[in-house]
Length: 355
Image 1 (cartoon, rainbow, N blue to C red):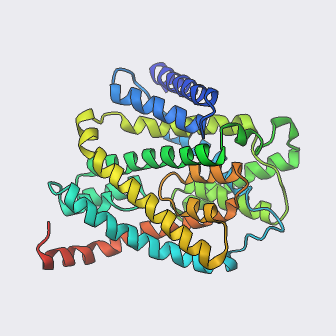
Image 2: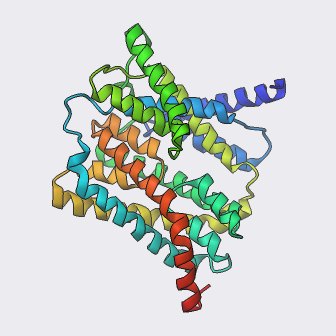
Image 3: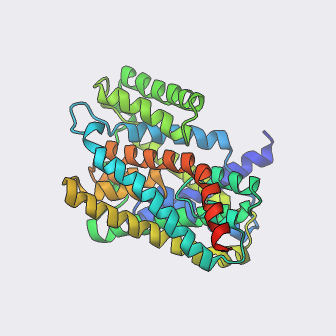
């Protein structure tokens, strides 16, 4: 690795840290990940600085956060998947409803783009995967990436802000939810490291979506649910991981023109509002049907920023196991059914002579 690239990495992390400090000072929600994301995204759009986070570095920090989120599956808890049948079925209905609504809206707001771009740009997850699928079918993969990136950015800002205003959630909550470095025993540290390594490579082997995060999450969840450990990654490491992930998300805006961002801002905002609204509606219905916590259902159903939603759940003592299971199930449904349903939507479009 050249010295210029190392310098760019350090510059990116320092600027991301500054963004996090600013939001932390103002007691904003998820300060480290949102502060770094917003700061680096803005500077990336400015285009006068070379900002970069290596993929393998980001993957390692995602594993740290996966281990943290997996700690929400505590031994003896009431979190059993057998009790979530109705809400998991609700996720299935939600994913199809989101797709139908997004296509109706994007047909109106993005009439100049082809069907492949609108279809894969309107799915509720999978930025990289949906971009590739769109390109393979003749779509504008850059437009799809902008739509997904903007949607995630807007959702991870709006939802935490809601909890900040109405539930009193601040960045300080997280420090109360994670441990210190000196509190870890050698056995606990070994188990957490094992969860990260086995989860990462195991998730990659079985092709889990976002395996760097979900693999360690699953293994950590098993370790914690079995009662082998109650430990969590140290707070300092968790903060650093959030800064790295936030910076990495921010660098996605490198190479994007403000002109394209402005052109796709309204469709991205529309998707964010629709997806949040549907998540709230489904959460309310299922809360009334099952009695499960409304906010837990909502956080598991919001399609954008699984890490951010789960961190809020962890800080507010909401069942992280429930949120992560439903968010992961939702992501798997999107990855599985998006390419399968594409030709069906194409046939319907052809028969109705739509664009």
